[in-house]
Image (cartoon, rainbow, N blue to C red):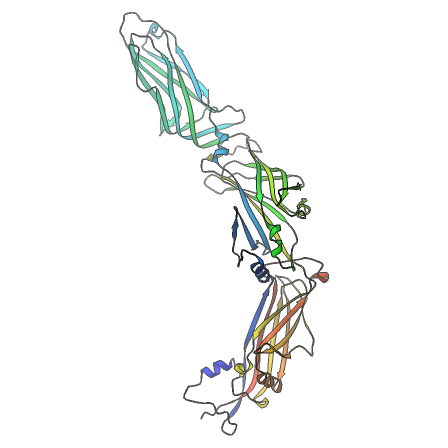
Length: 543
């Protein structure tokens, strides 16, 4: 029968009273059972409480405090569940730095039509000439989109006495879907029509990284019977504002000198409880690449400074610090790159003893490090290459004597009801303890009872001594189950002494008497659940 004292009272009508006079009541024996309470003592909660109490910023539960572009997360959790302190910063290579991969040079094209009036026809072709827009042998551009560019017709020399028109064509440049062309007229040596044209929102379909410029001159009439001379002019194509590009861009180097990564972790060490330590230092760099170009990103000349701005050494990484960054997929996912530096592959732990608070380094990005693989590159003015830096300090636990005290409500009078007043009313009371230890070391447990003012009125584990809670881990916790049995006399005595709480005192030391560090996971700790059953005599006659 699952029945608690409060539940029992809730079933009684207000118009009835239980008779407590043994001469007036009928009695029957009843078994009751139910939960007493539970304690979930997680190390992460203890850590956060320590940070919250001692940090002047009053960092709460997983609250991130922003400081000068970085954030300080006092108790984050990684994908494995490891608790860590972390500082973040980022480097961004934006369009202004990356567009050097698609810079277009200006074109200056000059031509002369020798004595066109001697020709037998009055339409003379301007011979098409190839003009390179990109001078580099390792590139193969397919198309570029631009928001604006300018075409100028200058130094035009046309003999007087003739009338006609001149048209310039650049078939590789399209405005909308139409190949670009521009025409001017001339009459008796006077030119009409714009000699400067703005090209808006166009594309270039490249031929060998360039375009062909040609056209024609049409002579309509003569003002004199005999006119002689050459027609000459110059075309300039300039100031392309490129907004996107496709093709193979060749290999380029993008450099960012003296990048800074600041962190205040060693200034924050004073907020830690002495039981917690950092067992490792991890520097991670995660690259998110929106550009359709693979890169090798290398950090070099990594200088380490303390808070007084004094150099304390250089970070040395085995085999160097280079990130292989994949290309973004057009219309799909971004490219990625990742590298991790820790005490296994660098001298970062040694440098940490100097209490650094800043790294200064040079970053170099080499595009298309494998050369032309046949996969087209692409880039647009919204493309970014972000390098997110994080400095992680995984928390470890190390104590020679770990102890904590937890309490669970245990109001014996409310548990049984007012009708248990003597030993004969209660046959027995059993308390069942189920303990789950998610720490890799054993712990000891002492159980006692206190009254309403906190005075100790009894020990549940005095006879048997300290209970040993077997150690385990987060996937396979150690489980210890035991029972504390009280006779009727003992249970009623706790009622008489006004028992209010059960006290759970746990104690332990980490491995090898506290000399080894234990990694802290988000669910590392102890969990203790207490339930009970009892057999008592209750009245069934009502007044």
